[in-house]
Image (cartoon, rainbow, N blue to C red):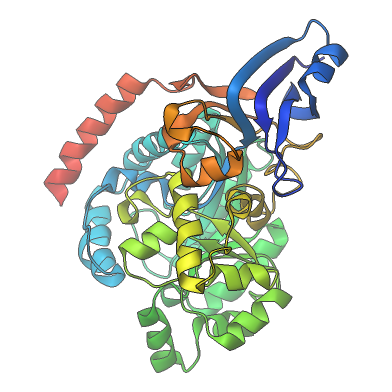
Length: 438
């Protein structure tokens, strides 16, 4: 029989229903699953003699789902800052990648990203990058949960020379890792402006065959939309609709440029929007109309984007920015209230990745992906409402414990599956290489 563990805390925030704060409750783990959520005293009585961990000043909640990352780009933290998207991409990021990108770069960058994400309470990330087989090995080694994009771009990179090779290598990745308990997939065309119609039609078919979402940058900037209109005579979303990509799950990342007709159309589709507020702000890409989307029933998840365009993988910071930005954009102080921001960072992210039956909330039968946030420090007092304190006051340094599939990856702020000193030494060697190549 799998080992049983009782985790109890001052509050349990299950995310289902939204806004619930269960005082002095426990989450009971058995193997990789949650088997019960109930009052602490009842848990101790029902499971006598069971190992327990009590966190008297903490909130227990589902682990954060970072629904859009480029994990290995963590090694490019700070490269090409304070520039608009196309200048940043064409003159800084892509040239650096052309010189540096390799399996070793991706492995080191992914290790750094996973360590940062675990310490910030992220238990699942959706990645879009090259050499994903090396990211998969990092996910396997560290105990993290990863949804890896089968990347497609219609131009050569160090990973693939032709569009056909992207598809072939994606198929190899699925063959190698399909069925792994912590690794899933999306089909991940980079963006409408880097992938042609023929490739997009094949991407739709491959996503259908694998029963996974498509994961794609869409309507990130006004320049993207204006260029599409000038060159193709249609907006990118209109084109994706014509090609059938709005008829099945699509994680559309950024979506800062939406007109009224698109806002009216989206609720009738299975499209999820992945909002990356800090990256959009830093690149001056525009504002996603988050509250309008949520109010119309569109699923909106949160992502950090890559560290090169955000500078961190901090989902707590992303939540706070998302909640504040939504209020400013909508002119409504009630927009994206704290419980909804937490839902965007957890259950909505799981929905965007097709994992809502497995993760994203603390419910019996779901996988035991959960975190503990300590609200006992002076800066979080008095703790009237744990949702509000987490979204508007807490930092990622308040995350003390992280479990993925019932396995502890962080305990009392100590990483259990990564050697922090060794990782720092590895990253320093890459800092020197990046500096020399930039």
